Length: 176
Image 1 (cartoon, rainbow, N blue to C red):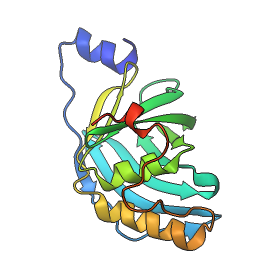
Image 2 (cartoon, rainbow, N blue to C red):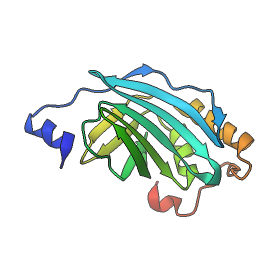
Image 3 (cartoon, rainbow, N blue to C red):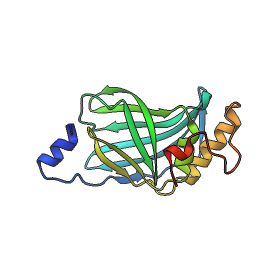
């Protein structure tokens, strides 16, 4: 256990919950071969997180996080993100200009990300350095559909799988 989790534990203090400041959008944008949709802004005593979900060429999809108030000197290179009931492993790239950290979380199988978004009413980020962050997004189905529709329109190689189809090894990662 490191960073924020150790501090909270040492102080026997539960960090307050994030509250939604801006609701997720249902309108996509397309720029520089990337489809993206704003997924809300969340606040906790001045610490603010802004989420954007995206899909780009090559089936890569993920979440951009702009975190104003991230207290650590680094950011995890891998994060499991839970969309509602499903956890998706995401790799990270990040840049920092304290106190702001901008992280790009992504998976090369974009279907897992877009499907998770469509099924989600919360997003949970959990890591020993970060602790547990629950973001009360509300229903993200329309946000996920806006992202999917944009990708189908602007990213020709990104064709949606027929209804009911799942990617290879889906049951390994998401047993029912």
